[in-house]
Amino acid sequence: MKFTKMHGLGNDYVYVNGLKDDIETADPAGLARDISDRHFGVGGDGLILLLPAEDGVDAHCRMRMFNIDGSEGEMCGNGIRCVCKLAHDSGAVTENPMTIQTGNGVLTLDYTLNDDGDVDCVTVDMGEPKLEPDHVPIDTTGMTATDQPQTFEFLVNEIGESFTGTFCSTGNPHVAIYVDDVSEVNLTKLGPLLERHPLFPARMNVHFVQVISHDEVKVRHWERGSGITLACGTGASAVCVAGVLTGRGQRKITAHLPGGALVLEWKESDNHVYMTGPATEVFTGEWVG
Image (cartoon, rainbow, N blue to C red; front, side, top):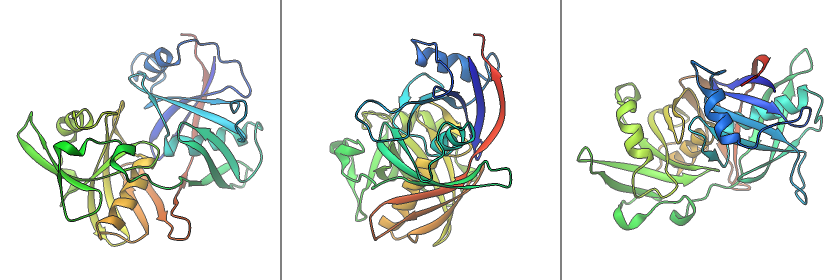
């Protein structure tokens, strides 16, 4: 099986182009676990399949993404930029803007090309953030509401510590937790406890946020099903929304992630979040299992 290793700001996945090659697997979850292993496989934060859109869906192509643990995610912000690059650079889809079917609906992407005619930078219309607790989803019956929108305090029983987080969905469930210094957060310890908190029925992507200014933040990520990653596009989008809701940020910000910077904008005109960042191919190969 041919594959392409790609990353968006270090958030790396193994990509298989089902528009050009046959994908011979009845178990993509198992393939994701095997191929993502950084010691015995290709290595990555998961597996992403580029496929034809489903019948009746008006889109140029479809994306399915699987985390390291084999769980399937609804969307991946860094991943969809690379799907756009793979689809265009392979000649499978050349329309600009490009529409891609995801687990969070059909998204529209605008892209720019480099001097070689390959996709360089991609802006993704992430759609409207979902703010209702049932749509994130979270169980607010076990939380304490604060005076800020979508922001709740909750207890982590295992360590006897309370956290205050701002919740929304930008394709996946996210919580933004504001701290003075993200470098001091023990993400290895807190990430698993917060991801699998019983108040989060679909688990949770966790983002610790340090405010630099009203248009600039630093973020560290713990992604549901993958752990610590260098970047999370849907998470950075959620951080943009959280900043506006809590009065900590403007509608257009730069988020500095461990792997690099993304530009996010939550536009008032259409209530959509727009994410802009790079897509990078690393190498191609053939997986023999």
